[in-house]
Image (cartoon, rainbow, N blue to C red; front, side):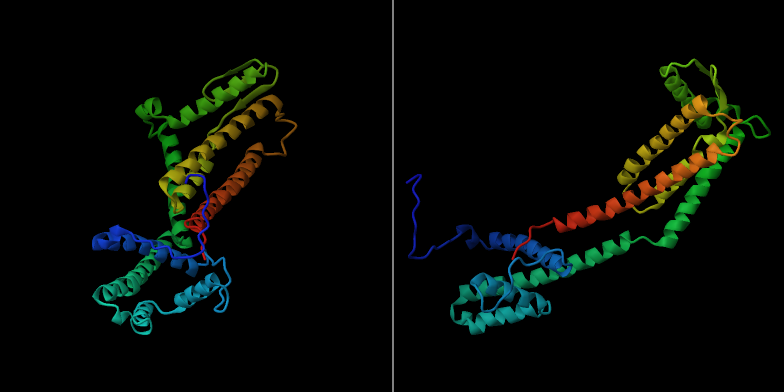
Length: 321
C-alpha cells in the first residue's frame, strides 16, 4: 500500500531484464559498459581515481570485492580475461550448466573483459598521441614566436614608411588604409574626451594634444604601443592553444594596453613637467610597467589552461570502490 514500509528479512529478490534475452540488446549494453570500465581503469592508472574502501581479503564483502578488484587491475591485460573465463568454467563448474550458460560465461566473462582491455589500450594510445601533439617544444615555440614578432614589427615600420611622405609614399594607403594614423587619432580623441570630462579645456589634431594652462604633448609613433601589441600577438599565436582561447585573451589584452596608454596620455597632459622631469623617461617607464603586467597575465593564461585540463580529467567520472 502507498505510504507503507515493508521489511522483508527472508527470501530472495530475483531480477530478470527480459530485454537482455535479445543478444543485440545485451551486446550493445555491455559495449557501453565497457567504455565506462575502460575509462575508469585508465583513470586509476593515472591516479585520478582511487578506491574509497580499504581492500581486505578477510574483511567485509565490500572490502573483499575491493581486494579482488585490486588484484584484477594488477593482472596483465589480455591474459586476465582467459584466466577469469577458465575460473568460471572450471572452478565454478560453468561447463556443466548447459549450452546457454556456457555462452553467457563466454560473453560476460571473456568477451566483455577482452573488449575492456582492448579499449584500455586504445585510450592509452590516444592519450599518449594527444600528449605528444599538445606537448610544447621550446625550440619550435621560440622560433615561431620570433618569426611572428619580426613579421608584425617590421610590417608596422614598413607601413609607416609607405604612408609617410617620401620616396615610397602611397597616397592610397595613407588615405584609406592608414591604421597607424587611425590608432593615433583614436588615442588622442579618447584622451581629450576624458580630459574634458575632468573640466579642462583641451584641443587636439592628428598628432598633438593641448590642454589650456598645462601645455602640449605630441603622440609619436613609438608611443602607440605597436611594438608591445606585436609582442603579445606573436606570443599568443605561437603558443599551442585553440583559436578561441587565443582570441579571448588577445582582444582584452590589446584593449587593456591601449586603455593604459590613454591613461598615460591623460596623466602626461595634466601633470607632466618636461623641464622638471628630464631625468625620468616616461616612455621607458611605461613600457617596463606594461611588459611586467603582460608577463603576469600570460603566466596566468598558460597556467589556467593546464589547471582546466587537470580539473576536467579529475571530474570526468565519480569515485567508486
